[in-house]
Amino acid sequence: MMSHRLPFENRWTNRTQAWEWNCVLDRLGVANVRAMFADHEAHHAGRRTVIFDIPAGFVGDWLAFHDRRAARQQLVWRASVIALTLIAATAAVLGALRA
Image (cartoon, rainbow, N blue to C red; front, side, top):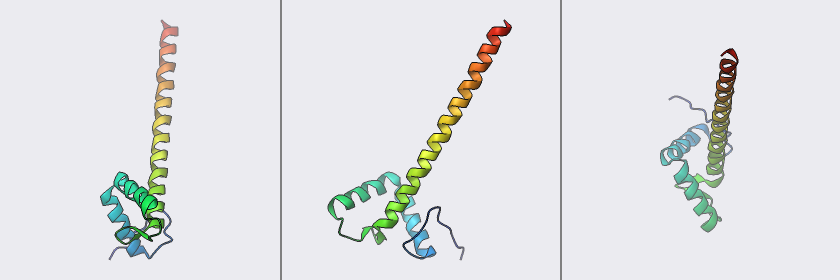
């Protein structure tokens, strides 16, 4: 059996169980998991698990990882747009100076 590594720190269980939980959360999707977690925190904060048998701490760590990844992707996107805009502006200015 192949050993999988989570892309975030796992403080909750062993690798195999954590990978299974990660797969379940991935199948549900970030938006659905976020809604379930918010409902858990609002109405059932005393319960240890959020979805099936997955602890609230693991779900929180999983959501935090996805938030960091989305923020990093957005930063790369913005930097790319700014760089391409600067290149286009420089080309336009150089083209106008040569004419």
